[in-house]
Amino acid sequence: MKRFICCLLIVCLCLAPGMSIYATESVNQEESSMETQASDESQLASEGVDLGLQSEAAVLMEASTGQIIYEKNADERLSPASITKIMTLLLIFEALDEGKIALSDEATTSAYAKSMGGSQVYLEEGEKQTIETLIKCIVIASGNDASVTMAEHLAGSEAEFVNMMNKRAAELEMTNTNFEDCCGLSESANHYTSARDVAIMSRELTLNHPEVHSYASIWMEDIVHVTNKGSSDFTLSNTNKLLRQYDGCTGLKTGSTSIAKYCLSATANRQEVNLISVILAAPESAVRFNEAATMLNYGFANVQVYKDEAPGALEMVRVNKGVADWVSTEYENIFSYLSTTGENFDNIEKEWVYEEDIMAPIVKGQQVGTLVYRLDGKEIGTVAIVASDPVDMATYFDCVKKMWKRFMKID
Image 1 (cartoon, rainbow, N blue to C red):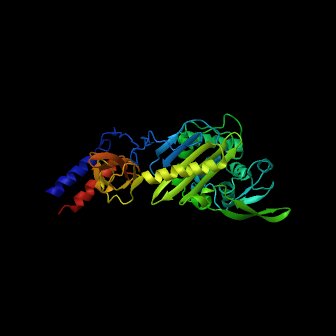
Image 2 (tube, helix red, strand yellow):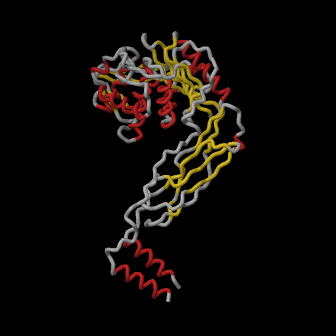
């Protein structure tokens, strides 16, 4: 009897090819960008704390959450000098990730790139160096000529590369930043950034491209110039004295001009806590290093970070009106939570919440649930649970196929 009924249904479907099995209107689920760190928008800058900094502006940021622990004139627009090169490096590493260039590729130095003054590695016109060597020249020795060589290699001209820098800054919501060159030599009042924005781009670079630390932590290294004049060695010397003076320092970039004074974006790691210490317009070179270290000491003494790298297995989620009835899921990001009050992370509880009545089509990465974190009963953050694969809406023939499979399984 069951077989007869199923056959009858299939025949009816086949005789009505114009029949719509499911409503053509799909339920549009709002795509919400769940915060992957606790309280990304909140600022933990300690009110009333005075570290006695002489520098014009400063920011201390915890890298995994992006939270500000300490700040002074964080949004004041100031000249960044060679800290500009952090954005240059970010675009280089993103190009590497996208496969546009490879570390072994070679870039050729132009007459314009050779003409750069200030910090340089003395590249000759027509000289070829690998991308990896040029990265070292930029990170270690702050080579302006190397920066322009890479800018021209990636964008055709420094001007076009600067457009790319400003576009990326806008994407990162660096609202107090505008670049006019790729290396920071500019004395224009229209070339500026803020301590907060420097921390933002430093975080983007180091969090998504941690390999930069393997270059930024090199103290000295020789490169070889090969030109029509022959070959010669040149020693790159790191300008970041904290590499030798501060335990746990991993980078990142120094800068100085007569207008910008002395600047620094320093990164350091201790016991799985990663901090970014930014100093702008310090009155003397030694002051920038001392004050960056002061902020780092303050951060490591007051900050603890919870990072859930093994949140637990996920369930498959039921999909209605799809070619598949279930979709596998994954976490969108790793959850991090920063505390400055000595909270007991053993009291953190987790709750997995899955959406109901999910309708096809489903796109890969679409949110289908939420992992909620609570500490002592208070919600401290969430991570989105997303679809691992796409699921198309079932067509008329998909429905016939499903019914046929079910028919064949009937005893």
